[in-house]
Amino acid sequence: MISSQENSIAIRDNSANPAPLGLFGFGMTTVLLNIHNAGFYELNSMILAMGMFYGGLAQVIAGILESKKNNTFGMTAFISYGFFWLTLVGLILMSKWGWIPATTKSSLATYLLLWGIFTFLLFIGTFKLNRALQFVFATLTILFLLLAIGNYTENESIIVFAGYEGIICGGSAIYAGIANLLNEVYGRKVLPL
Image (cartoon, rainbow, N blue to C red; front, side, top):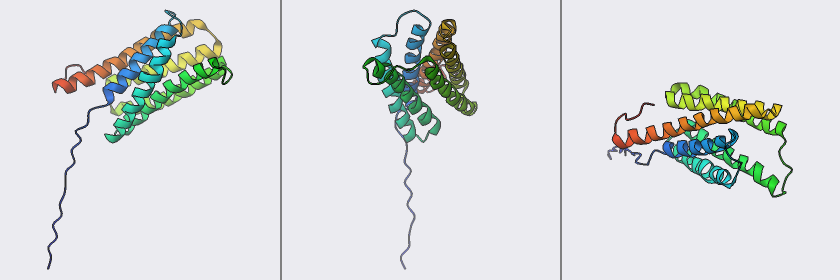
C-alpha cells in the first residue's frame, strides 16, 4: 500500500506595494490640472504629458500590480483613473490634430458627470478602507460634479472654484501615497491613514 502525503507549499507575496505609485500618479497630475483650472496657467504640454504618462500609464501599471496583490478595489480604481487621464488627453489632442471634432462643453459635462457617479460608487467602498482614501474619493466626487456643472452651465467661476477644490483632492492623494510609503518603509505608523 502506497501512502500519500499531502504537500502544501506556502507562497509568500514579496512584491512591492503599488498603492503609493498609483496615488502619487493620480495626486500630482490632479494638482497640476487643477492649478490650471484655478486660472494660474494655460492648459499646456506639461499637463498633457503628465496626464499621459504619470496620471495615465503609471496608474494603469499600479492597477495591474494591485491585481497581483488580489486588491480588486485598488485594481479597479488605478486602472480606471489611469484610463480617465488617457481618455481626457485623447479628447484634447485628437481634436487638436483634426482627427475628431472638439468635445462640446455639454458633452464634456456628461463625461465628467459619469466619472463623478463612478467615483461616488467607489467612495462607498472606501468606508471599509481608511480615512485618507475616504477623503480622496469624497473630494474627487465633488470635483467631478463641480466640473460637470461648470462645463454644462459654462460658468467659469465654478470651474475656478473646482480648481481649488481639485488641488485639495490631489494633495490628499499625495498625502495618502506618502503615508503608505513611509509607514511601510519605517514599519510603523509615521503618518495616519
